[in-house]
Image 1 (tube, helix red, strand yellow):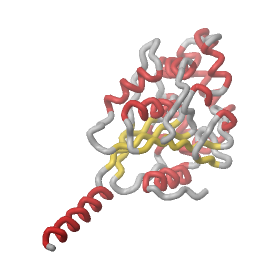
Image 2 (tube, one colour):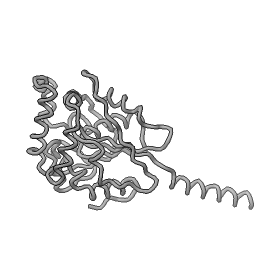
Image 3 (cartoon, helix red, strand yellow):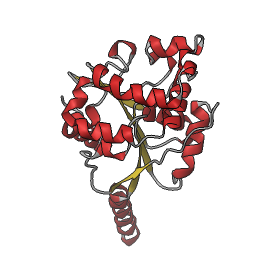
Image 4 (tube, one colour):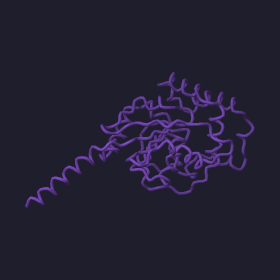
Length: 242
């Protein structure tokens, strides 16, 4: 009886420890953003945010190669989760196959080439983007961001500041990686949150797990409280109710 009691107590302690073990959350922003994009994200207790720092990719780097380089910032000896927005979600898609995280959540993103809009896909064969230099692309990004995603005006100052701080070469080479992304399949375990008014990566091309009515490409910040609540529910294993 003493042995049985001991075993039951041990199992209980292991269960409690498992529920409270610290989990690292590695967060990947989009091309024109940084950790400020997640300023309204509140993680559950025992989840720790770790913001991935982007370097300027090599001139001819592929998205998978760049993802492998960034994986050096991830401690895979402990439980971890990946969260990515836009190109950050594409990087997380690559890393899901490579690293096998406990969960992968992508927001306003694509999981494979087929989910990219036509203006990205055709440039793999007609590379119009090569006609423009890094500084021109950065300048046009300010214009395109305001025109294509007017929802960004809710947090205009932050979006402009994040884009202002971006290295022009980073912006150009990231676009090149997206254009030449060749992924055809993706893990069915990826949880994909996407908005109905995302004009950068339109919903018509996407097969999401969770659809946000009226959500734009910028909703991680412009609807930060809602997105934060959904992320918390996913991490805690609670059914998401919209």
